[in-house]
Image (tube, rainbow, N blue to C red; front, side, top):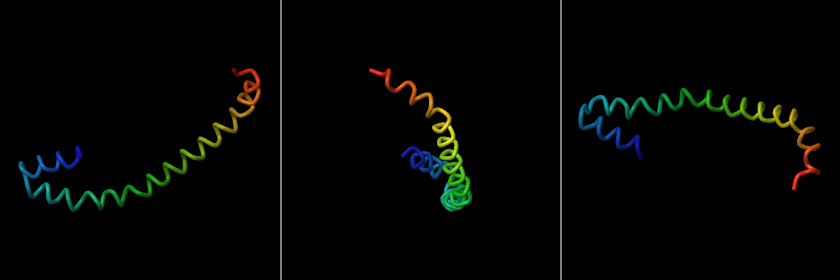
Amino acid sequence: MVKFLLWCILFVLCWPLALLALVVYPLVWLLLLPFRIVGVAVHGVLEVIFLAITLPFRLLAAPFRI
């Protein structure tokens, strides 16, 4: 919603730039999509490594939790 309101303000101030932004935004989103996919994969791998490292400590602490 905020992006739309900012676009409306830009449209009132400078409509050619707003129309250019309307065309360029999907292209930039498509260009950045592989980086988001890599980011999700790296986050998943780091989470698995973290859980594998902390698993013994959590198993040792589990019987003593209330």
